[in-house]
Image (tube, rainbow, N blue to C red; front, side):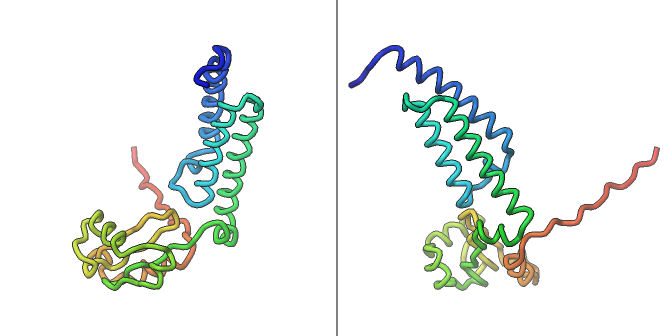
Length: 185
C-alpha cells in the first residue's frame, strides 16, 4: 500500500524529470501567450497540461513519448487559438468574452453584476485595491475577459469617459508606433 518497489520509484523520478523538461521546453517554444493571464481557453490548456503530466508520472501504462505528444498537442492547439484570435476579429469574439461594465459613475449595474455573478463586495474590494475610497469616486469598474476587475478612477477620465466605454465595445487595434528621432553624428 505504501511502497511497491524501488523500480517504480525510480520510474517516477526518471519519467517525471524527463516529462518536466519536455513540458518546460514546450512552454518556451509555444511562447509567452501560453502563460498569460488566463481566459477560458488558457485555463483549459493549463489544467490539461497538469493532468497530462500527472498521468505520465503516475500511470505506468502511459509511455513518456505519448505524454510528450500530448504536451505538444495542447501547446499547438493553444497556439492555433491565439493565432486565430489575433488574425480574425470574428474568431476572437467566438473564443473570448467581452469586458462587462459593472459600475458607472458610482452606480452599480446590478443586472450586469448578476449576469456575471459578481457581488458588490467584490467591486468595492477592487475599488479599495485601486486606491478608490468610494464607488462615487470611480468612473467605471469593468470585469475584464480574464476575470479581473479594472477600476478607472473618476479623476483619471478628464471628460474622456466615453472613450473608455467605446474602447470596451470595439476590438483592440494596434497603436500607431512613433519612429525614434534620428540621431546625428
